Image 1: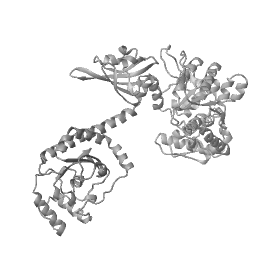
Image 2: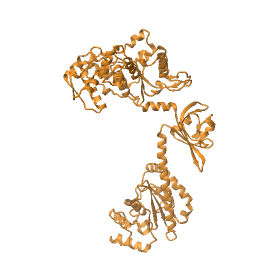
Image 3: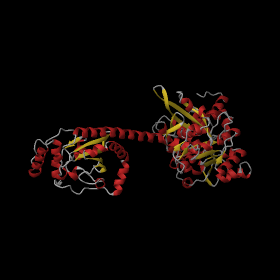
Image 4: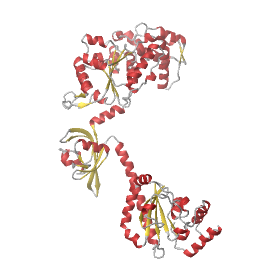
Length: 633
């Protein structure tokens, strides 16, 4: 609140009347009167300035560093008007939101040197009524005349303070104190302070916005650049700076001109961008002295008065894009060790060993019959390992032709129609689960063993060495050691993956766990399909425990699913269980239509469920549906 000049004599009379008798004159400004009352109640001496609360050197230095942007900005403003402060004997203060003096500019305030005053608190509870205390409470500019100040020693000068507000919050108070009141042009002082208030608020708001935008840009998985004509980079985010450093384009924090670094600069979307031609998600090859690489680039021209003044470029290396997709599409562990159900001693022993093995970084071999839960175990071990934040990539060696498996593992080089990383690269930082590893051809196993030993790979058709860091979890349905001794499996690879080994027992070796497993499957199905849980009656449990389960847990899963979906009521009885006779889910279904049809009925006609039961892909299943003349719908 900016006020007209008032009679100092009258103000002195009001002040003396209140301090001596406690009677408030009605002509005293209401805010001043309220502050005088508070100062009196708090027992603040009205004659001499008391000893001020002051920050220690370390805390003052910390706060000044925190507020350096505001201090530097006010420094600049003050330097432009220094002569005005000298002529009129003015003192300029910058205080933080707690009324601590961060900086004392110009002449002494309260006859104190700048160094003595900085770090002192000038709140109402310290010095009573002042323009600072009124602005701190009411958040508006206020001009206070000398006789209105609570401390007599300070009444030789008038003071005007303004709040610096950012996003509706008080962040600073700026104060000008005068000593020579008679010659002081109040309108000039008020105008100066209001200009400081406006400019500081705008400046600090922009800084906050820029800081937020920098934080956003530094967190995105893209390199972002702002480039001016000629190829100079005037801004790059954190990832962009690291990319530029990777091609030797940064020296002592100075970014080289892209014309000098990118050898094919005139053939890139950047060059077209300066001609006003935008590019969106284009695959671009960048050639530099150090390396050649590809990325997906978007270039947006920025124009003023129909002339391109600069361009913004956003890029993502193709390799990073594929890795990002590998993470985004859910290559994560779906199961934990806690999700594996069982109470038998053989199961508990296996689960405890899995917990121990998960904590080391050794490659691992899982051995057990088909359907015993090796895939779930691989997921659980990955989730319990230090690599849990990385991807979990799976590859079933028996489902892929030998000539294709090599490219699936190692990737394909640039000579191919599509250059792409293999599973080893996609699993970088995480785990690669190799199911049916016994079916891996010897020449592929030899290459894999060499890669794991050297921790480097070459894509098929490429000579470039690429580093990687993964853990292999391999699974085998048979005795891999015996296959190795027979020369069927590559011995050096066996030595690498069998440093740690877990044998997963067949379901018939842990019959007491079958009811628990069946109930757990029912709970999972109910949750997945938003259905109520069904009770498995004791007679049904006894039947499940009496069966040999040649297909192990996978077969049990199919049987329980069939009973869950085909039982109308809330209880699954003996009559609701179909065990597929004595055939189990052996490979006989591939030749016998009746066995296949029976398995299809167990799966409730669901293609995905049947593929899971028979341990084949949906494509393979469609082939057998066609073979047996069955409608896949």
